[in-house]
View 1: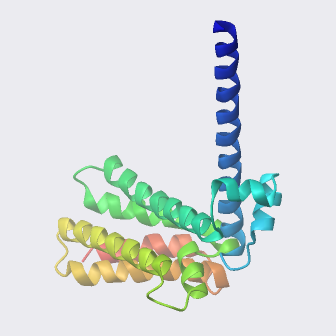
View 2: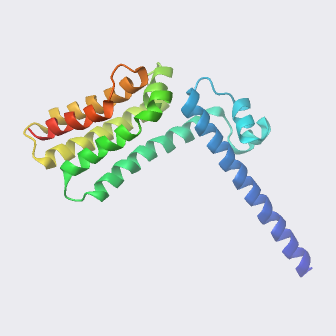
Length: 201
C-alpha cells in the first residue's frame, strides 16, 4: 500500500510538471506571436501550433484568447516597470544618471522596435475604444511612468521639471515611432545628445 501511494504521488507530480511545462510553452508562444504580429491577427490555432500542442490544450490553461492577451500585456508592462526600477537601483541618489540610463535602455531596444514596433503603440492602434480594459491598462502604465520621469527631473533640479518630463516622454516615445518608420537615422546618438541638452538647463 505504501509503495502504491508513492507511485501515485510520483505520477501526480509528473503530471503537474507536464502541465506547468505546457503552460509555460503556451505563454511563451503567445507572447512571441503578440510581440511579432500584434493582438488582432494571432489565433488560438497559431498559438497552439507555436506551443506544439492542440487548441484544446491551450484552452485547458487559458479560458479565452483575451486571457492570453491580458497575460502578455501585464508581462510587457512589468518588463518596462522592472527596467525603470533597475535604473533607479543602479544609480541611487543620482537622478541625472538615472534619466540617462533610462534613455540608453530605450535606445538599446530600438533595433527590435524597428522590426516589431512598440507593443503599446501597436496595441492601442488595434483598440479604438478608449474604455477598453486593455487600453486603459496601457494608459495607466504610461501615466505612472511619466510621473516617475517627472520625479527624476524634479530631483535633478531642473527649473521646469514638468516641461522636461514631457520633452523626455516625447523624445523617447517619438524615437520608437521613428525607429519603426525609418524616418531618422542614428537615433541612438540623437537621443543621448537631446537628453543631455534637456538635463543641462
